[in-house]
Length: 298
Ligand SMILES: *[C@@H]1O[C@H](CO)[C@@H](O)[C@H](O)[C@H]1NC(C)=O
Ligand SMILES: *[C@@H]1O[C@H](CO)[C@@H](O)[C@H](O)[C@H]1NC(C)=O
Ligand SMILES: *[C@@H]1O[C@H](CO)[C@@H](O)[C@H](O)[C@H]1NC(C)=O
Ligand SMILES: *[C@@H]1O[C@H](CO)[C@@H](O)[C@H](O)[C@H]1NC(C)=O
Ligand SMILES: *[C@@H]1O[C@H](CO)[C@@H](O)[C@H](O)[C@H]1NC(C)=O
Ligand SMILES: *[C@@H]1O[C@H](CO)[C@@H](O)[C@H](O)[C@H]1NC(C)=O
Image (cartoon, rainbow, N blue to C red):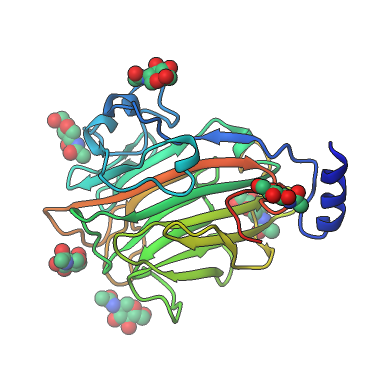
């Protein structure tokens, strides 16, 4: 550890621990020569088999959009991807059968305890698809950390009209970050407009040891800025049942009043042709400020 690093860490000790390496704990940024076939292959950075329609493969629903690279992709010359859902995006799980009321295409980071323990920061950029708009009448989960027993989400990034609850300022075309699924009430930590055709960039600091998180955010090519304090939130981080896995993509919920089980109940229109453009998916070991991350404006 350099002398400068020690000084920086002492100064910043109130906001972050400094035992982090500041290196990468996961890199899902897509190299410029990647083909669709990569995403169905064992070389994919994500699980090549999950989470998508029963009769669908990743190479069928990933495309490479014209969009310029996001701030996280540019330094490593990575390229964005677009992922798509259709009426065929019905996932069949071994435990619960075909989830007929959901439409899913989620890149999955699983069996990687190092991404769901310690003190980590996810970086992620997303933008609307010009050709395949979402329908903001529905709730979409765009990223979340699911417990290993699938019974809890520790945090989630969503858009669209919320299925349940009243979140005041949330009405459709916004991005919002929510906390632990079983908290009463569920906390909404951050809300921002979801502008068309521009990057929305997130840094999500997760302190799995001390159960707190913090949000960094920007749009377009701007560096991230801190938009929340450190917030208490159950991240559990305890093996074996609650370490869990991270999903990034599209999970479209059904609409309908008083649904008791949204896997099977509620309405999904037919003829779905929707997409989401993603870029810059990677995770850093540590807190962006104490790591002096070049992606943030301090
Ligand atoms: C892409 O380029 C990298 C480095 O140049 C190389 O290792 C890799 O095999 C290439 N992948 C494909 C699919 O061509
Ligand atoms: C997948 O294909 C099988 C065999 O044709 C069919 O029984 C099943 O309903 C299909 N699943 C979905 C979600 O379309
Ligand atoms: C945190 O989440 C885990 C997994 O759902 C749960 O077992 C635990 O009871 C939760 N802790 C609190 C304080 O809510
Ligand atoms: C849903 O529940 C509310 C409150 O119990 C009730 O007023 C409403 O009629 C219900 N709607 C439907 C469609 O069942
Ligand atoms: C949006 O979703 C609602 C509910 O599924 C549906 O009634 C409506 O037709 C959809 N709108 C568009 C533009 O697809
Ligand atoms: C942080 O990094 C920038 C370059 O990325 C450098 O100019 C600056 O001096 C660093 N700040 C500290 C406190 O180390």
